[in-house]
Image 1 (tube, helix red, strand yellow):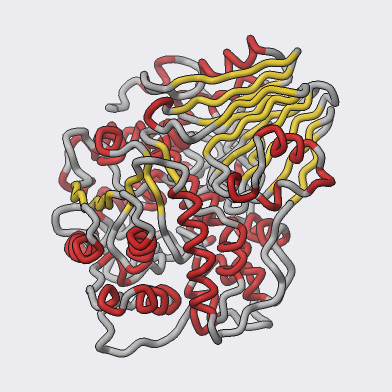
Image 2: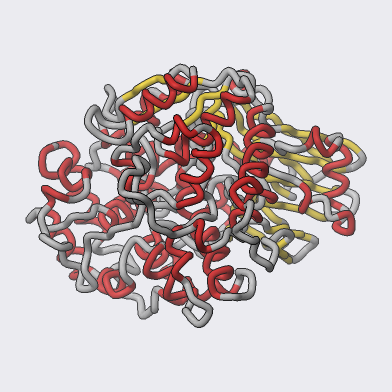
Length: 582
């Protein structure tokens, strides 16, 4: 996996961390050392030459994994940037836009500074004792932990939300850095949040224009960091906003649309790209590589910290994306829109809103799969406690963005393992989106409006401002409804009609693909005996899947990914994965 790595235990230890990371044969390692301080970045090299930096000077080692997209606009040299990070009084971090994960090792002061961008677009994991090791992947840090074991709370999170939340990782003894967080290690660890959205909301009058100004700047900054971008383009209103802004800037971008031959927004993507005068590459998400191999690659890239079924475009991403693109831009415009947040009243519970709208499974269903005596909702309490203070909608929106960082954004590690990526992580855009008036989150639309019903009003308003004709191109299935549907009742049984025929594509694949079914069956048989899971609960889930009465593959993907990763990294023997067909 590409990413930053570092240690206070010397260059030899840095080499051990790099060797333990999941790697492709084209990866390159750039590194620097100063005494016992050592850091570097595994990167795509010449395929994405404008990303990533390792800087060494003035007794400092600085590493950026990704890009500081507004560095030129801020007129910051790398030296000024890293010196500002090491000197907390300069508030440099709060001025930086991502996507990035950042490290600064001050050999003279004996300090290590780590930081995630405002959106949390790239993870940083760390293990601290007398010294500190850190990396963008979890697996290399296991060697820093005596007898590593699964954290029951993290397993609960994976089932509940689709990703491990907050500061936890799957393993006791290794922690994760939340979004917009600055860590200082000087013999002990201290963390602080360096950025949060403004407290006051914005007036509805003129809001779409203000939002569009912030979005244009964020996209322009990101586009300037790569010479040959490809825009991930399902064709829905959210992605066509990005395409339209890039087209008006004259950016030589190709749009890349992935989906099955009858799925997604393939037709509307082609129409929108043609209207904007942008090339559109249409690819299928079922190329030569088998889904089983794609799942194994996705689990390796994410360390099972996120449900592999959440990864867009499997198995295309792991099989052919590397041949089709060098740098992939994600232009999703509705970060922070969260249509459900428009219904959160002042006296509502942000925790309840998260549980209802941002969770993959109901808490009651999670409890049936765990032997540990834990209330899954405790993790949501922790996320809300770490978010900005009310009113309730503001807290819920901020907390939801923390959840999205641990799920949606973390899943993009799979794309990053194949190509360079650029997500929008601008503080000004996130702030503007977080303060969105409720009327632009949730509202009604004319029956004649061709835009999908699931799209928040802000997307529809901005598309119309960019080009009324572009707004007339209908959205397909991708744009119609993004509301999460678990297809699983609180007792763990199937959803409305209980049949796979109308449910999740992975459930249908299980019913028709012998290799995939054997792969899933083997992993579910094993994981039922792994602590902290409940043997009977997992067996019952497996029986329902085999009987075809699950409409969602969500808990199955979480458990199979967990077992595939734990069998390889925690069981300690090469035979741990024997029998699993990958």
